Image (cartoon, rainbow, N blue to C red; front, side, top):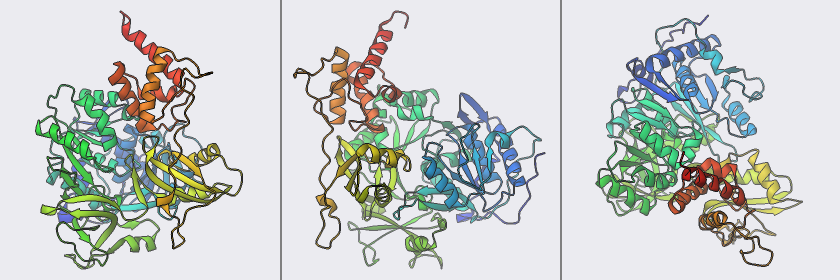
Amino acid sequence: MTAVLPERPGTRTGAAAVPDLLERLALAPADRTAVVADGRARSFGELRAEAMRIAGRLAARGVGPESVVALCLPRGAELVAALVGTLTAGAAYLPVDPKLPAERRRYLVEDAGADLVVTAAGAAAPLADGVPHVAVAALAAPGPELPYVPVAVSGDTLAYVIYTSGSTGRPKGVEIGRAAASALLAELEGAGIAVTEGGRVGWNASPSFDASVQQWVRLCRGDTLVMIDDETRADPALLARLVDEQALTDLDITPAHADPLLDLLTPDGGPRPLTLLIGGEAVSPALWRRLARLGERGVLRTVNLYGPTECTVDATAGWVDGADMPHIGSALPGLRTRVLDEELNPVAEGGSGELYLAGPRVGRGYRGRPALTAERFVADAAGEAHGGRMYRTGDLVRLLPGGRLAYLGRADGQVKLRGHRLELPEVEAAVAAVPGVAEAAVVLRDDVHGAPGLVAYYRAAGPVTEAGLREQLTAVLPAYMVPAAFVALERFPVTVNGKVDRAALPAPAPAPAPAPAGDAGAPELTASQTLIAGVWAAVLGAPHVGPDDNFFKLGGHSLLAIKLVSRVRAELGVSLPVKAVYANPRLRDLAAHLDTLVAAAASPNS
């Protein structure tokens, strides 16, 4: 029998008395589509009923306010229902991407002190010993229907814990309260970003990243969430088709993924009711100018969003306009920006300094890390309210006229790579932990096989191979944190202070190049192999490519795979799915697959 949720004392409080997200969710029309996923549309009435069943069964297990429920679920309708059900029970959710290495999933669950793990049907072994596991299907199974009555919570009640890369070598969990999450939605509306009533929002980000919060909060005001699967996310052609077929009004995307998508979104230059919410990494001047031109022509509109996980996703917003250089705009209504020098003095307009953020959306801190919380969440001496705090972002910015900010880079070891925030010391610690490695350093370089990438430098104290390093790191790190290149050194260059001189670390060797076609012993290439080889050479920066070369062993990765299919489409006029590159990494196999696609396109029955 489904347990009735207990009504707990407490009032919903928050910045400027912003209503709790679930109070708004309860008002969405029951027959409006809430979620589109897995080939099916679910209404708000269906979602609320399912969430209430989940919440009741969670409550029967003792889950309530300040409990943490780990959601180890792929992006889809079950994830949305489990997330809303967890919040309805008054608890907080911890997203755990099922694709993460097992060790990392276990660490997240144990470090967060999760009370329960929710998994998909047929999930593998338990994530952590001693933590109860339950299948989402069991929580959502049909049962007595109850009115949608979420457990009462306060604005300070924990809403979610999301982990970010850690400078100490361990990921750290950021705690965000319910009022802060509710205020995010209100501020996106107040800033004119979330304007389309009943809009259709693409859920593009992994739930393990805070950009996903920006997407599911839109559901709570009655917008439709369109779940974007991994295959579609990785293929610009499929993503462009989904934007059109689902009539998306809002799409969150990184600059690296926006660039190839634009060619397919606007082939005729016609207007479309689409807002691109771009963020996760710096926007290049070239992409900024391109987006600005599209905005001036009314084709689409783009807002550049910036914000750390610690301040509830988005802190500043700037419309992409005709400005000479990219900027991150100014603070959203619920946050205040402070640009301070090394002595914590405010800088004048035109000056640069570290960005501090203050206001109600500053998070509670790092879960189980009081010392680190005290270091990064500091007293706001200039605050309007006694006891206020501000967050030290570690980001360097320049103060522009009108309060706008230009992003200059980091003041520490944190970097952004293809939209992912990561701490270099965490990757270094993983490399140094590999048996046979005596010393390690990791840097982000712009010249790794023709694209930005991580390079791991190591000094060996035993037998170590690049293949062995890559295999062991893949078992403990997310794919985006595994270095693209490895460089063995006999000794590390050091500064006069005895520290590793990162500026003096050598560039990685170029990708191995087979002998050019025509050389003695070099295999002859077919016509399609020659075409593919030329595209590979351009994308990977490799001077010569042979039929038995492997795209990923030559330095290819997800972003380069997207560029590869875009070049194939532009040069050969063939739509090559990104998944075909992963299924056929060897050049001769990909060329054979391309021949099949060309033949199918030429067939009179196609």
